Image (cartoon, rainbow, N blue to C red; front, side, top):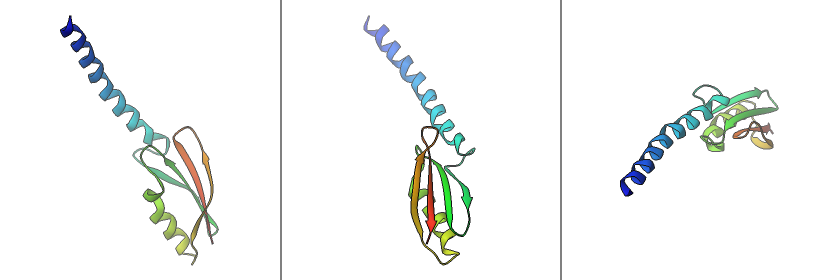
Length: 96
């Protein structure tokens, strides 16, 4: 009887791995195929980034945000953050 239960546990574990892999792979699809974040708007006053919070955070795109504002002699200041579509987050930075 124990070997039957052990076999069922192994089967569930083997099913879990591909399901988890698929969920993590598809997590990035909402932002863009293979991307962790996407710049959805930028001008001399601000930059807005959409990112997948499962695979990215501010450190992932901070360099791009800082570089964008620096080209106008300004610094990036977080202005607004909102949840969109579950794990996909959107954040806007003012260039001041």
